[in-house]
Length: 162
Ligand code: PNS
Image 1 (cartoon, helix red, strand yellow):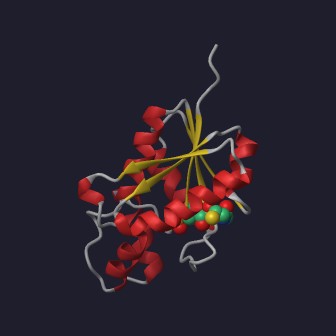
Image 2: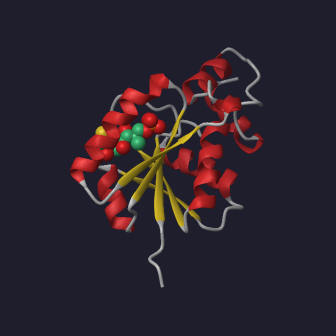
């Protein structure tokens, strides 16, 4: 029997957006098993705790049978190795994402040559979307219903103090 194809979808997910969810669902349809992993991005100061972020992702992915949501305090490649995952999948929105994502993919490849990074281009309708934009709109009382799943809209508004 062929080995299971296991992928990690990593990110800071602060909070998860419809754009992330689109990438997560498409990844789950391509691989046997998918781990969505909440990690630290040293360049960002998160609004939500790791547990809050995992909880929000779990609530909006509960219907995906081959998916688990976890967190890891360390290098992404070490997490992938622990899970037996040979694939990292990330969404790519625009040229502006490319340089940073390319740098991370090459770093991860040199840290663990077994791991391949795959990029999925974000659906056109979400190409402008980011967690930062969602937080910015919510902070000023704007409507975020188009940007995030219904189940977590309230969490974001309450956290930001709406
Ligand atoms: O959603 P993000 O913020 O673009 O995700 C970036 C993330 C969290 C995947 C990245 O910062 C990461 O992999 N952090 C874990 C630490 C690590 O492995 N760093 C080396 C990769 S350059």
